[in-house]
Image (cartoon, rainbow over all chains, first blue to last red; front, side, top):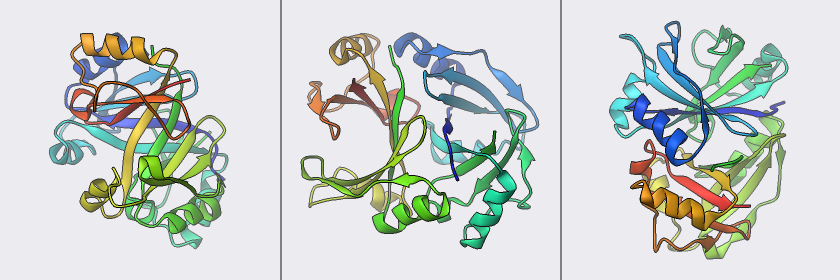
Length: 134
Length: 134
């Protein structure tokens, strides 16, 4: 069911410093920040040859990563995103296995303009898993 | 300097349950457990089309992931591994930038039989980063 690892998302307390570190110290290809008000984050995409790293920084008053950064003031890996072909079929199969889907259970349009769902971390090795239909 | 994302490592409290979840619920290609006594872990490799996920479970009395699982009893993402061409050049460049390398600073032979180093999480967005020479 799952395909490629679409991205690893890392929440950071200082977006400029983190982007500079990946660009200047690690020599990675780092894109300009993108503000995603619908998702409450500003995102910097880091392009690796086989996948992406996304640096996340809170945007607005109700950012979904504000609480994470309170608990992890140095930052940390927030979630991983796997690609699926059919997100509704994936959801139904996961729910049938007992896995919980966060929110209403209906896919939302994610930061890449594609339908996404998040799975409950307690059901997946303590890891917040995003599924994105590609 | 960094190349591909070699793997995402997830520490888990129940290796069999986590492997079954990736295999049966997510439909991923999951390999048999490998005991790595030199590294204090048993590893299950999950092969995705573009990278790997590694499930880690403590092996022996001094496992480097035992403390992590005490703090994160449901499991969680333990580290991410980036590939580099020349690990000594990478180390020297990182240290010149002020990044700390864990341990003696000399590369060790990692679970894949290749030289690896770990960077201090406080210097990299709260994220434990492994560099592997490929």
